[in-house]
Each structure stands twice: as C-alpha cells, then as structure tokens.
Image (cartoon, rainbow, N blue to C red; front, side, top):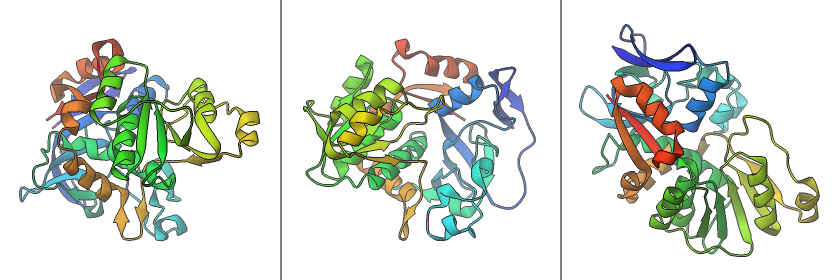
Amino acid sequence: MRAVRCVDGGVEVVDLPEPGGDGIRVKLRSAGICGSDLHLLDSGFAPKVTLGHEMAGELADGTLVAVEPLVICGECDCCERGDYNLCRGGPAGIMGVALDGGMSEIIVVPERCLVALAPGVLVRDACLVEPMAVAVHGVRLGGIGPGDTVAVIGGGTIGLCAVTASRALGASVALYARHDVQREAGERLGAGKPLDEYDIVIESAGTDSALDSAVAMARPGGRVVLLATYWQGMKMPGFPLCMKELKVIPSSMYSRDGDLRDFDRAAALVAETPDLADILITHRFPLDAAAAAFATARDRAQGAIKVVLEA
C-alpha cells in the first residue's frame, strides 16, 4: 500500500506492506494535515512511522467512520477516570507520532477508536472530526456556556473549530486571526464583533504575543484556555495574570466526560454544521501528491486553512 512518511526532513509516498494484527481494518479516505505534522517535520525528531492523526475511512461492511488516534492502556488511573488523553503510556500510543497514522490507504486500529459518522457526513470531510474534538475538549474544560463572551486567538483549523464549538454552547464569540481568509471563515462560522474584554479567552496560536493578548483581553477573574501547542515553550505575562486572578486551563487532545467522549460530541457537531467542510477545507490533494500538499499547508499566502489528502 501507499503511505506518507518523513524522508530526509521532507515527505515522500512510499510502498509498505498492508498492516495486519489485531484490530479493525479501515480503508482510509481522507487525512488532514495538522500544524503539528509540520512541526514534527521541522523538529529534527520526525517520526519513523506513517504520518497523520486526522483521518476517516470505511469499514469492510461499508460503515463510514472517523478514527480517534489514541491507543490507550485502559487500565491506569487516568484511563479509568476518563482522562485517557493523559494515559500513563504517554505519547507512545498516538497514531502519526509513535504509531502508524492515517496518511495511507489502510490502517488497523482498536475498535474503541472508531466513531461512526452521522448520515449526510461525507467521509472525505470527516477528517475534521479530530480537530473538532480538540476544540470540544478545550471548550468543555473552559466551562463555556450560554451567555458567555469568548475570544478565540488564532484562525487556524483548531481556532475556527473552537468558534464553532463555543457558539454551539450558546456563547458569543469573536475571532482574532492574522489572515483575511481566516477572518472570513470565522465570520461564516458566526464569529461576531470584538469586545473590550471577555469571560473566556481561547488561545490557539501558540505564541508569546498571543498569550500576552489573551491575558490582556480576559476580564478580571476570567479564564484563559490554552488550546495551542507551545513547541518553543511559553512566556506567560505573570504580573497581569496574577493581578487579574485569571484561571489558566491547559487542554490536550480529547477524553471522556461520563459516558460520552469528546470525539463523539465532535462527530455530532460536524454533522450539525453542514457547511463546515466548505469553510475549513481549502485544498484537497491525492495521496500521491503529499509533498505538494504539505508545501501548500505551509504557505498561508495561498489561503490554506485545512489541507486534506484523499486516498
């Protein structure tokens, strides 16, 4: 089968044996390129596995599914209480990082990783369930609800999903984004006019300047949700943070709240937002054109938000 792997700091499509072993076989149809994939390539520690953690495909019986890319132990204290994103096994269970990911034709995954798509959701669009789950998790941890005022800093896919997830809970949302295409996407998803301050600020850009802005925009006693990944570390503006007594809430991946996973909520929200894919997916490439797809994902001047590989 064909699969996308890191070779000499870039990406190449290589031929690999089809996977076997225990689990459910998924014929992959779509895989999104995440900013984390680009950071991994640039880090010098690029994984020696098939890339991609945003994926959707088809089972042997025709069922269309999204794939939650976490293989967990299911037995540690974190897994038992539902916080399986914090599994004691660590990143060794993340597909596309330590395990083979979704930029391929076939993958075999544990049955618990599968989330059936609602009728009407196209499998070519369903790789958006994973980034939506990241946003749903952060919004849940942030305690966002009806009547809250929310600012989202960063107009990439995660930030735009956070706009959608916050609005779905009844909050009013403003988006602060660098690029025109991102701001236009935010408006189409319901982002409104900016305010002087906010109950909750969701930081999804991952820069020191964004952290400064998040603290400045939060009202006294408000909350700052850290939805970004801080690859270069972070410098938090400590004095205003403490003077305002802000609550800082880190968020990582997705987990379970009671019997319902963030991934389940995300799949439902993608189904409830039928124009989401048209707004977020700006470029599509066949799997064989992975190098061009990654180059496009890096180039915001081309208006890229979400770039998707299709098998």
